[in-house]
Image (cartoon, rainbow, N blue to C red; front, side, top):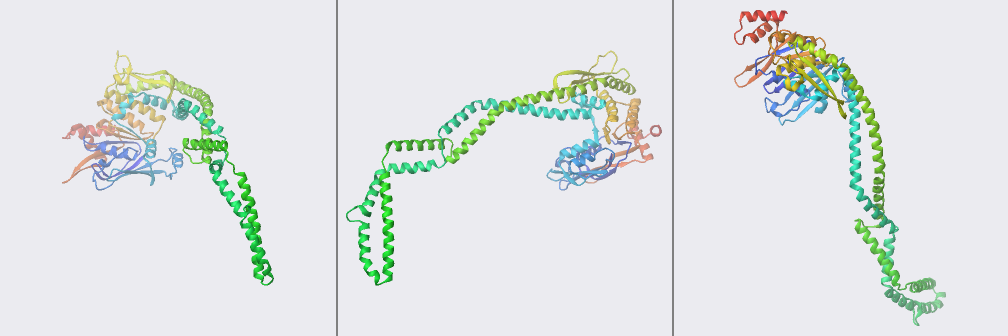
Length: 551
């Protein structure tokens, strides 16, 4: 339950702190006094979006903080799942700076706004005039029926599986779309793959082929240079080897006189051996180098093929072409497996659909099983609120397939008067009738799905007199099981409250402020009398106020 609300620098509130209590609390105040401002501040810590228009002082920071007693509401798992420290008193805080940027905290731990809202939804339900309009919405009507039937947990489990089902269908659509899109591409991939494989590429062959082609292209020049080299080395009449031989022969006689000369002669003999080996290699190369126009053409065509493939696939080497082959094979394999994946998804979707349909059927049966009880209880309570001739019917029709909410389409049918056929709530109910119908339904459902706190913002719209008192009795009855806070302009309802707060404006020389205070018994009498007497409080009004508080 809400224990304390602190507000700093919010719209017309400079600095405000108010304690709340269990049971039934009422908030009253003149029109325009700022009751909605309090609700707006509370909404901030329940996850509502905000901007810097919320700031009273644009140079400062707006801070709203609420303390909630959460012991006994099984929220430990929520805190554990989101790595938050659990305390029996949870503190929710929202800060908004001058730029409109906000920060949210749970027990001093920074959290995102969606998480703050998720926890807020578990702590407080705010019922306003706008929420009465939601009674016309089919999804809301279905949620009400499920809450009354105790199907919330089963429906949540079903909806999780339905989300999985929707994801599977989306994946299947994407696979089929990809299959249609890549069908033409697959033929192209296979063509490229065949072309690359037929090329029988070998690692390093490009460099070898280019080198071999270079030799063949200059064969005559190479052969001529080798011929001249062989001639000068040893084949001509006057050659290097014969001249070196004469030099060695002339040097040998002197070796017996000087040891260094012997070393020189030995070195020359070694060089002579190396030159003879070189001559043999030159002659072999000369013999091997032959002009072969057929091989030259073949190599030229081979190199052209490699260059063309490299250019086509925008790479620089055969090694990169191997990577291209691998990539194409992956694409072909993916496309080849796509058909099997589509078949597998279709089978899984069929199985999940069957399981979902069974779960939805059980939920539907539970809805239909409590329909009559729900209708009768609503009708009885509406009779207590001055609508004895009202009729209320829950129309449940089957859908053609399954949806997020099962296999049912639910519509609340209503008639407030005799002789009027029931029709959709949105078409026949007035504002006051809608308020009483919503109050009736909320009071029934709240007993089955207890939240710590429920707040009603002028639920008494369109009611007065004895009916207002009965509305007050229903609200007070609800407060035995949860904290009920009601913003009201009716004295009959205000008189039922255990705790009474008054919202009022204080006008200073420069600014008007909204304030709130908890009234004492004698102050309550005067406030309720004022609600009945307008500006001048009469003795009769004071007497009636005391009677209302005593009843």
